[in-house]
Length: 66
Image 1 (cartoon, one colour):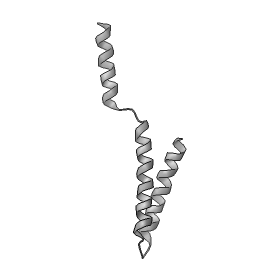
Image 2 (cartoon, helix red, strand yellow):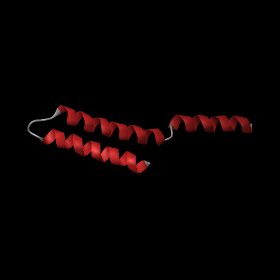
Image 3 (spheres, rainbow, N blue to C red):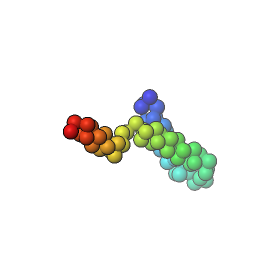
Image 4 (tube, one colour):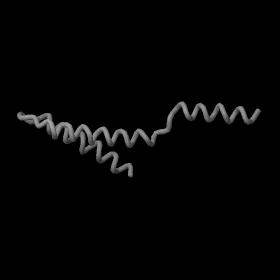
């Protein structure tokens, strides 16, 4: 599943750069590339654990040990 996320980022970045380099810039192609890029980044960021959740879990576990 991570391969799909990385593929979305790569394809989205490539499409966004390709749409930007043309002389007659197509706004819809540029927007679709940015949307693909953002979807890939969002899906990857969902899998990264929160730093504050880990700190809360650690402090709660210490309270039970006392």
